[in-house]
Length: 83
Image (cartoon, rainbow, N blue to C red; front, side, top):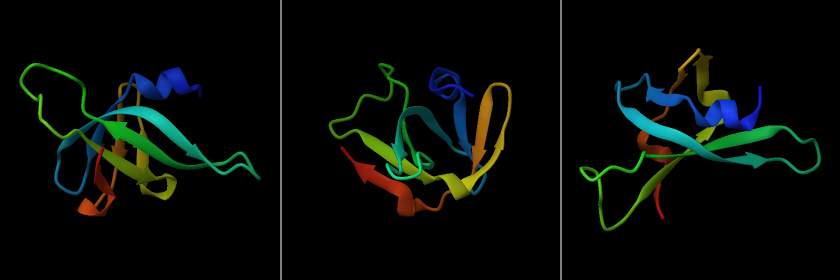
């Protein structure tokens, strides 16, 4: 799977059913080249403009299923951070 294919998928948190956004970056372990986590942000729209943007760091182990259009994850609120 290529990075641009991950960027096209909507991220759904199976813990509470929320749409978290889309993949904007990857955290990769330099020694092995393995993906450690996904960086996810909400899609920009006029309705969800806020002063502080939020992003989520989803560990690779938190990914439950990668579907055609959706990526299902299990994330507790510990992964949220302001940018």
